[in-house]
Amino acid sequence: MTQRDCRPYFLWDEDVSIAELAAAMQGPPSLQRDRLMGKMLREARDVDVWHFVTPTDVAQNFERLRRRLGRRYAFWSFLINGWRNDRLLDA
Image (cartoon, rainbow, N blue to C red; front, side, top):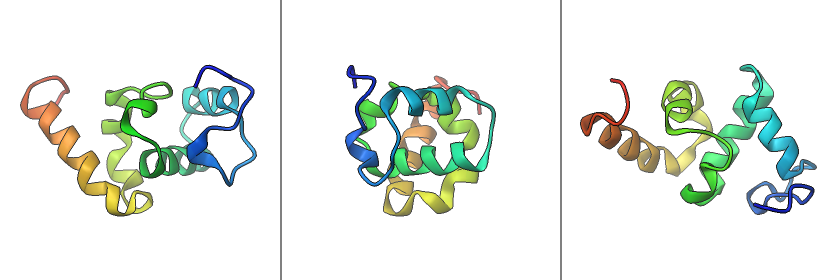
C-alpha cells in the first residue's frame, strides 16, 4: 500500500493505481466511487481497506453498496453493527 504508483492487489482487473484509488475514495459520491469501494470491501483484507476509507465512510455508504459486496456483506454488517453497539459509530 506504500507504493502509490502500483496497482492494489485487490483490484487486479482494474487499471488504477493506489494513488488513483485513494483520490477516488476522497472524491464526491459517484457510480465509479461506489463501484470501486464495493470491489475493495469485497476483495481486500479489512486492514487494507482503512488505507482508503474510514469506518464512518463505510457505514454511511453501506446499504447503497450492499449489492456489490456478495458474501462479504455479512462480515461488514457484523463489523458495523458491532461498532454501533459499542458506540464507536453513530447509530
